[in-house]
Amino acid sequence: MASERDISKRVESCSSFEFQLRDINTAYGRNKFDENHNKEGIINLATAYNDAVRDLITEKLNQPDFMTWDSTMLPYGDRNGSLRLRKALSGFLSSCSGQKAPETLDPDKFIVLNGVTSALSAMAYVLCDKGDTILTPAPMYGAIPRDLLFQYGAKTFPVYLSSKAELDGREPFELTVPLLESALEKAKQEGHNVRALFLVNPANPNGTVYTKRQVLEYLTFCKRHDLHCVIDEIYAASIFEESVESSSIFTWHSDELPDKTKTHVIWGMAKDFGMPGCPLGVVYTLNPRVLAGLGLVIEFSQVPIFIQIAVAKLLEDKEWLKMYLPTHNKMLMESATIVMETLKELDVPFVKPSAGLFIWADFRKIIRSASKESEKQFAIHCLNHGLAIAPGAAFYYNEFGWIRLVHALPKYKLIKGMKRLKAACASFHTTSKL
Image (cartoon, rainbow, N blue to C red; front, side, top):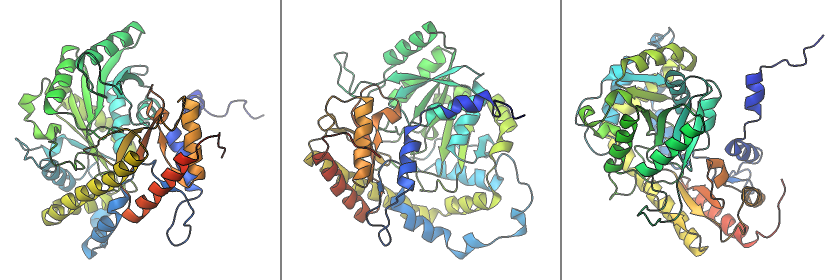
């Protein structure tokens, strides 16, 4: 006789987990825009995919030396990632910010996994017991709670950022140490065992970059409370505002860090190089116990050797990178400008981005009496107008009416998307249905 429960309680619990970005992407996947075959299909401004650079990357990866298979790709490789790749990562991440790292990054301190999602999940395994908690600013990338929870049971505690300037001098969406102190105290009062602070720098969905002074304050806060600090720098090479300086941990000397054994960096190829379909992420840590802990789980997150070799070749080509990185950031500046000009026409306020692939915009003038439900109605309304957007609730934000718009698209597609956005805003009056 069949069991009444043929799957684990863990899976049943995860099945009920709300992940709006996935739901929007599913709707987009049923009706994708195609210039030649489906011009009325949905243009995706919801998923942070760097579509603008696809031709540059495809052209590079189609070069003959990237297409050659040899016998070294067939056996098991170094489980921490090939030494060639780790050396290439060391060289690239030492300089991709435009600032030369003050010390050489040690290739042996890198762990290579199949994407930043796997890297964050693995860090949850190493740093947290089931039920432990990680602080993270909100709005936050919507997959963070899932990545921490699903496999290893770590929880997320949001540190909510105000969209308004505050009397204490805080700028809109500014993370301050008093906010962190307050959130930590509240989490403890609610029974959470807080183990770490998780930051994304440059930030998602804000598109802003923490200053070096701010990062130092956050790291000092972590040291004071004996917390780890995990910093996701997946947009490290996507700072397109020339006046903004990178605060990447790779631009610091390790002796500058308040606690270098509890400061860990994550990076990957998905955003800066538009390659989420070839998932490759890395963790860089100076903590030998964390390295050893990651070594226990990376067998489940291996990157195919041929992808490791291709990425190593790409990152080793310094002449190509001299062309690619400024071209990439020029594209991002141009595409961000197109969206900002449209938002100004619509009288929609926004956070001016200096990095990343998206703009965080306040649609409360369009979405009257903003709530989680009315945000969802507006997102569905946009889908019905051929446009996928990401509502603020998908980023665990407590102020409804904010929307993230991805701008890293080919120019012709983005312009068409902006026309659809204008039409959707002009006609948003009633509830829409899928």
